[in-house]
Length: 191
Figure 1 (cartoon, rainbow, N blue to C red):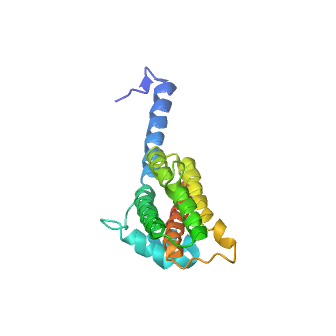
Figure 2: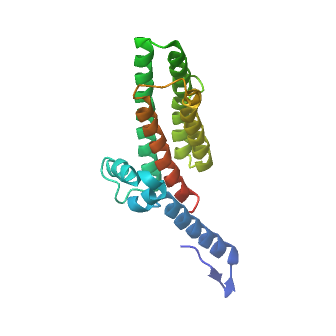
Figure 3: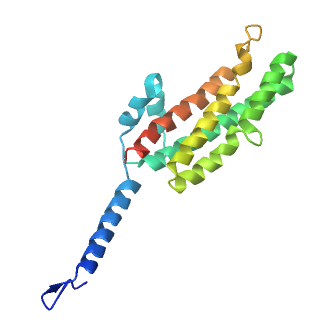
């Protein structure tokens, strides 16, 4: 135990150092274990709040009592799965052949999601950033994933080009997962 008083003289440095270490310990532990209820997170997702609750509550071991980082990690894995399923679907659409204009759009979308600089490659960086608690880097990656997903539909704005496939449902799942992570991210910055 530190002796703060010696010969009726108070030694402030050890006392201040001890208090600072105690403060840092409690502050770090409170940041590391920030728990937010699923309902509170999902209330920030607008019209997909029931989908948000279903996703977060499907976390193995349950979402109750889970800290925001573990919920984010789980949802990033859901996002990875959604992107992987979408790229598999796109590959099947391309393999079937058909309208060359649609095939060009599918190919561009596939590149946006799984190419060298695509959304799928952002997932690993997001997870590394999350482990390092570099939340700004996670949100930067998330915005890139969101943009890559939105870019899939830039070519569909041409009214002559109609997509009869289920691709919109696949990309909607990507958008929903990113919306959940964005809702979680609001709590990172309120710590």
